Length: 219
Length: 343
Image (cartoon, rainbow over all chains, first blue to last red; front, side, top):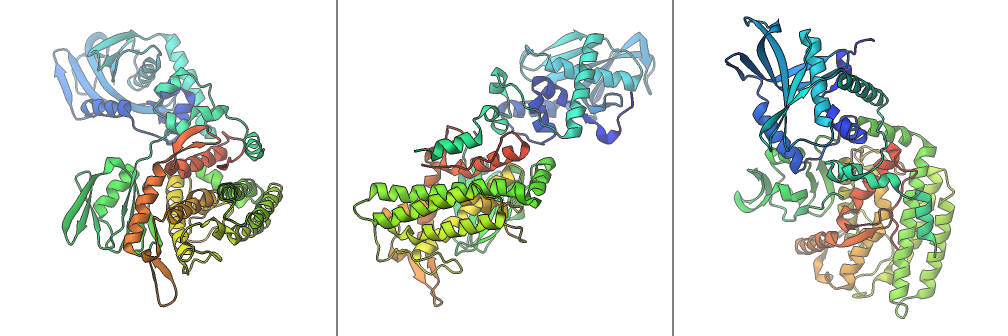
């Protein structure tokens, strides 16, 4: 497998869009469409608090690194981890300017509460693949922190999850290269999509324009 | 569907527009006259010579509020556009089609058909509603001819021919336009369309309405990521928003003409609202322009059911919806461009 070039990197955060709806991802990442709504503004607020790359804390045996830029040549992705915790562990890896060995655990901050779909999880898995590639280590654990319930959920990361992310990212690159916005099946998920007004999912199932015009011209 | 927010029309020529916090601050001789929160505003149109502060312009660009400058007599001067939507693939498609005669004619054809159809409907309504007062025969003849033009247009692949059909239809339509004026006929009569300058009150009103509609159409196109300067029917000309003029074709009669007729027939505008210059140019007084803009803004809030979307939307969103539908066609989501057809 050939590595991606830097200018081909896609945004890691796109994974959650892609997992939610391929068309939503294309609208945002290929067509550069975006519309703020209450949910996205809340999300921005939350991230403004966590996204400070200059805060690095060490408490006890753990180093907390916020807003850590990551990338993967193999996936052709780059993005930012909200937080990566480095916990002292004899099976871990050495860190620059730190004594001892550490294992990494990324934590992604989300507004709201745990979701039924696994878009959040897949985004975290992509972060893990990046971290593994950059740090030369294996990561088995990661966490999602949900602002509404103020609690983190620890996840065990399986190879199966990683394979799903790899397949997904490959599909993303394919669409991106063709600048293609896929058409999708509309459904319930459209109701809570922030791009609803731009996507107009109903438009995809419209009558033919010639039928419409003939209908108007009749009588 | 997106929400229609307010358009602020600043009709006093000596008003300066500035930013105060997140508000539009209107200043007259350095004194603040009014403040309006920007988040309630979709567009600002200003008719004057004082201009606007760079800070306000910056905030408008950031919040995607269109800021349009008109001369105090209502002629379009320019428009501030923020960061255009980043969809470069869409615009390249637009350019490719625009360079291709046949592809362009497919879109232009529907726009012309829409224009002619809507003109027919306006005349039909006059016949229907006022059969006893108007020259029914004369109007019906024109309606028949318009219908013929529309049928010819529907099979036309040649842009120049289309333009010819359009020009013909327009002069036919304007030849009976005066029939739809039912009140104050001594002041408001219509012989022919003239623009530079308008030589009678009806032409002055039409010109003003068209220039508002053109700026709204251009803003709508830029808003969906299209380049308002690159048209299909209208050829590129430096400084001209050709695509805005394209999508305006089908909107002229149903939005601008209908509105102008309405305010004349309801006597919301009268002879005292115009002054005649030495060169016979007829222009609206400041007071009249204010009245016009208030009524225009009110009209924009009125709902219609979009015949293709089958969705209720305010009139003011129609340019946006048509721009969106055009973008959808260019992207391949729709099989053709659906003009708005109002019966």
